Length: 364
Image 1: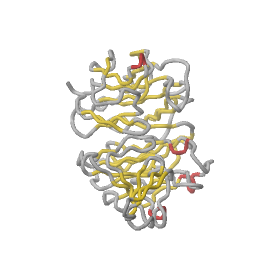
Image 2: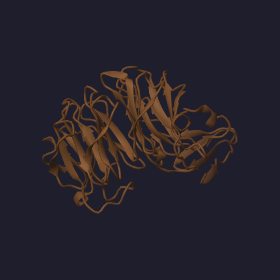
Image 3: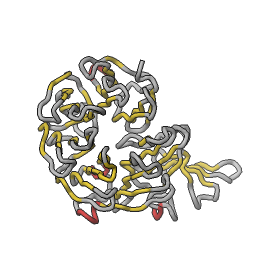
Image 4: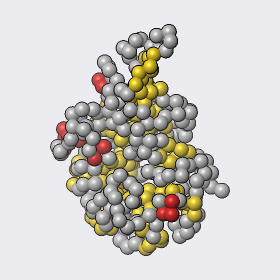
């Protein structure tokens, strides 16, 4: 807690824990997060927009868990994923990933890291829109690993679904590698042991799965739905990965490291590369200081790139990555950490380290 304020009549107490404002009306016995507008300490992943209702979304935040909106982001409420951490006193705990199930309207998954000595990731599932949650995977308990008491890279990871069968799920973790479930998250097997895994994507059919690694190794690929893996592009790091939403074998990567990202301080700009044969060969499209990438799911020739090249921040391409120009509609001028489809055509959410922004003007 950094500060505490009490109203003149003594009835309401306000405190700020990290960047979350909390409110108490019972003299500090219980607290509620004030999250209108939602600006928090850090996001590892962008928000998860419900595929059934674009007004419904959840987001995971460092130190502050998971939040939900039902009005398109106008207001947010905290979600109590692991309730024992809330029973007596509000506790800082890290949320790193939240995902909406592609076909089940009220089913969500969230990864929470706890506080103090429980920093290792735990995957939870809700089947009632986030009201109640069940623990489905404790990585430390099932697969071991070395986990620090305080913040380390264990918070970084991702979760994705096989588009042809959402009961097939892939989870990556920065410390341990990649895991696969074929029963909706009830049981898991360790399919790839590696370090520095940051994000996962699949091809439209789910046959091809790709793992983006920071710092070392580069890009891994699986061509049998995540059962076996190989290095698809060796590099000292891949800082952007996106798959074409309709073409089964086309994907893009940013090969290198962004000079301004906390993950690694590189000495050379990244190259934007494209593969049309599921990662076997690559063509360079641009030599830009590129980072996270985005392809519009409605008009795939429209792309976004986060970059510091020439101080531009965000670039847009309307020809499939061949040429790029400035794009700052409703976006901050500094570099975005990632992009998320906003649920309606032309809508994109940008997330930075401490806040989010939205544009509805990606399409001219």
